[in-house]
Length: 71
Image (cartoon, rainbow, N blue to C red):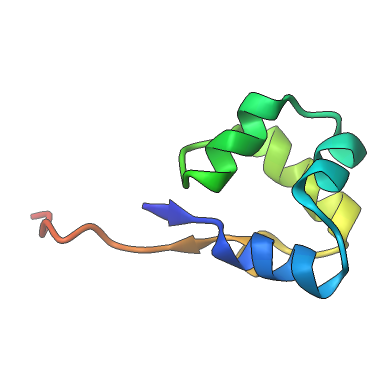
C-alpha cells in the first residue's frame, strides 16, 4: 500500500490545506479524496505535487507492505 501521510505532514508544516494543493496542481476533488484515503493516483499527479512542494516522491509518500507475503 502507498500511504500519503507524509504529504499531509508536509502540507501542515508549510501552512497549506489540501484545497490549496488541489488548486496549485489543478487536480479534481476526487483526486484529493483518493490521496486522503491512500488510494492510487496518477504519477503525473505525484509529479505535479513534487514540483509545487519542491520535494521528492519519498518526501510525500511511503510504501507499506501488505501483511501477505509474496513468493
